[in-house]
Structures are given as structure tokens and as C-alpha cells.
Image (cartoon, rainbow over all chains, first blue to last red; front, side, top):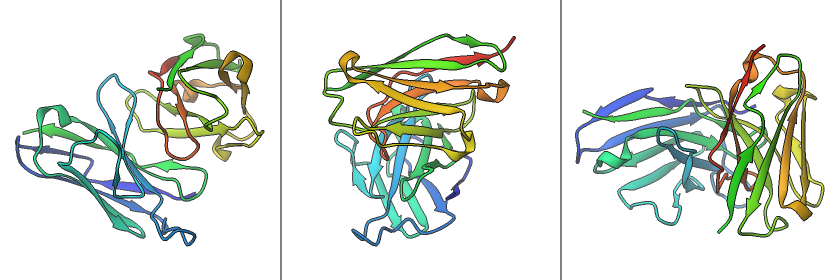
Length: 113
Length: 115
């Protein structure tokens, strides 16, 4: 199984400031077939199901604000919120879909400082 | 747009079978793969498995042979069956569209395993 790790476990950022979340996979998730990274990001607010934010590591899902950006390749990935808003308080998960069993990171909780 | 809704018993006794239904509305079941994911209270997400109307299915080996995922296109529903449950199976169970990228999601159904 591909093991996903995230850092930090949690972070508190002032409104308008940048939040950076890191995700690492235990093996590369770069697909040879299309040269894309099989890595997704989800946002989960309390009491809600997760919401898909990014796929192929950096492709933004429709409706996701452009203050969110995804990057990385191979085994190391980053989700950045460039200017934190109150509605961004949530837990963020990365997930690999390179090979089953599809696995998620443990999550990073983002709060307001 | 496709909407999903889970239903089933909220309480299951240890060693018994957990059965959940996901009702699909607003789209054709033949368009997507359909998946189940669970989340123990206060913990992270675990992929359970997926199904396609072609018969293609897969599930997480960590659940061994306890999992069965099936579907009934005439009812626009798909199902999760998990046998021999223990307290470790207590979780919010989500149904979701797609095989690898999970979207959309149902609201989730909390299942507690307890005597």
C-alpha cells in the first residue's frame, strides 16, 4: 500500500495570511502513462463530507477559489491557501489514486490564529 | 447534478452484518463508478471499495473478504455489506461517485457497532 503522510498535523494562521500544507507519499505517484501525478486534495468542514479541491496534484476543481493552489510531483506535494479566509477553516486531506488501495493522508487541521 | 444519500441501521451488534444503501439521483448509474469510504469518529478517511455496472469491483484488502459491494441500476442504488463487524468498524460511512477521485459525496451515515 502507498502510505500518505501530511505535515503539519495542524496549523493556525491569521486571516489573510498564507497556509501551507505538505503531503508525502511512500512511493512516486507519477503515472508513466500520462506523466501526471495521481494526487488529490480534499477539504472537510465539520459535519460535512469531504469536498474535492484538486486532482492531478494541481488541477483545480470547478468552483474552488483561486487562493487555493496545488503543486508537487513524484512523492512531495503542497497545498497552499494564499490568503486564509474564515470559511477555509477545515481539515485538508491528500489522497493518492495511483494504485489501489487508494489511500488518504491523516489530515491537516487549519484554524484561525 | 448527481446526488447521493446513504441509509441503513445506525446501530449494529458485534459479529453481525452492516448493510448500507446509497440512493443515486440526478444522473445515470451507468456513467460512473460508485464507491464507499468510511471515517471513524475523529479520525481519517479509509477507502472501502468501488463498483461499476460492468461488473468491475475492487475493495480494500485490509477488510479482507468481509466486504461486498453491489448495485441495482433499476432502483438507482448501490450497496455495502460488511460482515463480522467489530467496534473498529464504527464510522461514518460515505458513498461517493467515481472510482479514484471521489466526487460527489453523500452526507454520510453513522454506524455504531455495539451490543
